[in-house]
Image (cartoon, rainbow, N blue to C red):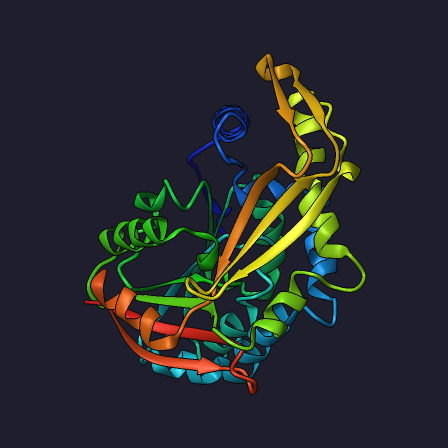
Length: 326
């Protein structure tokens, strides 16, 4: 069995440079803001895993139900050809595994490529899956899927790009449009796109997911300040920032923030800057947009994709959309 191919599009120095640029720009802006991706270092990923197990957090549970219950149906909808699967933001590749299993059982899993910024995690996944799928070609892409979609593997068979977990909703409207355009440009007509998206529902259900009773979301949100303390030698006092999650009904978006509870002056030593906070001043730490199915299908259509199927869980909380590049 050949060793898995790795395409390394960035390394630690790239990540450090990106972090410094994002933080300098975000903390000197008005209002202050930090990108959502900074939350997900080792401890942040652990906290997020704990968050997904909270009773209020429906997203992961609902999407997993769809993928588990509909895996064979999704595989059938792709047609009879062999499929090469690429998962964006794969992490441990847990979300996609029911579909990989369904394709493998049908003798149609030609290849699997996890695409993630964490090289160690990609290597671990490939090692694990080599045993589970000995007949599939395995490879990995170490990169940022907002910048490196041109590096998708160009297999001769049909490709399926999966983007699950509702991460699509963390993009702004402009970022969503740019992402879909870049993805379509990287695909051939007839390739597939599988998108997991959080759907519009009762705002109370949504708000509860971002304000769980155990306070895990709050700790996850504040964790970004620990990341800055560790990686940029900053001296944030995370416990003096309050977790805020607001629902905007007009844009169907959750807006996450950290609100200073006292005046503070923060030294970010690695950037040689001091950042002042007044009482009540906020850092915007991420958004999560919820979608109407028709609205999302229109966005896909405008970027060169035709939606062929949509599956939802029993409550209609999460949608999994299958679209084909046209």
